[in-house]
Image (cartoon, rainbow, N blue to C red; front, side, top):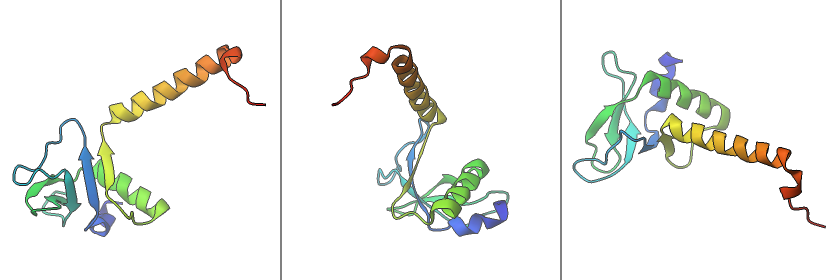
Length: 111
């Protein structure tokens, strides 16, 4: 999939990982995927002021390519968050489902 990385050029990404900080020039958290350079899959530039913000990791590029191939080009920025957030949400859903199955009397039924 890495050879398809140029297909991501122009994609807008909302950064919401713990390590992400706003652009030092304009405060924007949205970046735009740019061209590859050297060993890097693609560059990331601020969506507002075009300042270089970093490099797109291969794992995220592969994920984005797979997502776009399944669902098409997004109409708004794709949000990238820490995996811990996804894990916390999955755990919360599992705990809720498990508590419901162990205590069916807690499930309210509508007539």
